[in-house]
Image (cartoon, rainbow, N blue to C red; front, side, top):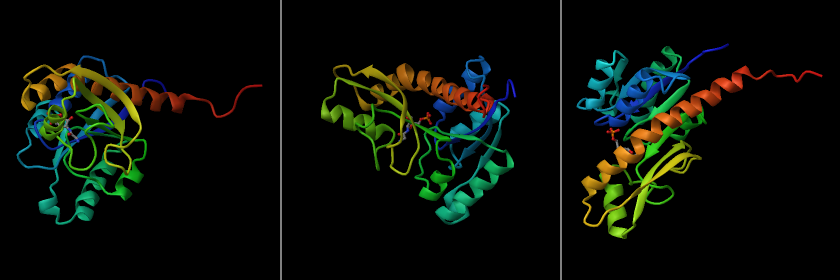
Length: 212
Ligand code: GAR
């Protein structure tokens, strides 16, 4: 089937700048093997929801507070994913650790971006600004961002793309965070999404029998 687009759901919790980068890349035709069909937000106040609505994308707010438990939260998410026939999940600043069962269900079909060069400054408890605080505390001269598949180990899945960013003398965590976003995250996340979607569609086009 030519020109088929992979149906993508983006999960976000905060400002949604990575979501915006993906939507902009889609608009510019840089992402053409997939299409964002759904945005799931798990915080009422997340600005990511406004961005998605502005782009005309179906947006659903599902909070753990309202659903009651992690199990019910994930069941509510799954229902939305199934309704929209989602094939690829893109975590973009999604601050919830999904269960192993959920992750297994989307094995090799779920991506995440982390604001460091993994395996440095990753794992349970390393998220957002704290990652940059830890990098500055350690005195690294180079940091960056990593896009990886999600597996049952927090930030431990197969690496898809990385980009390095210089740390400058006197950087504050906020300055470093912004530089990593500008110079790495907003560039490699759209690229990685297109790469994975293109690979997924290419697999479908492969004949299952080789001609003699
Ligand atoms: C981004 O820097 C992303 O890499 C990070 O949260 C921020 C979300 O910003 N994710 C993690 O730390 C995951 N462990 P955004 O909502 O503006 O895209």
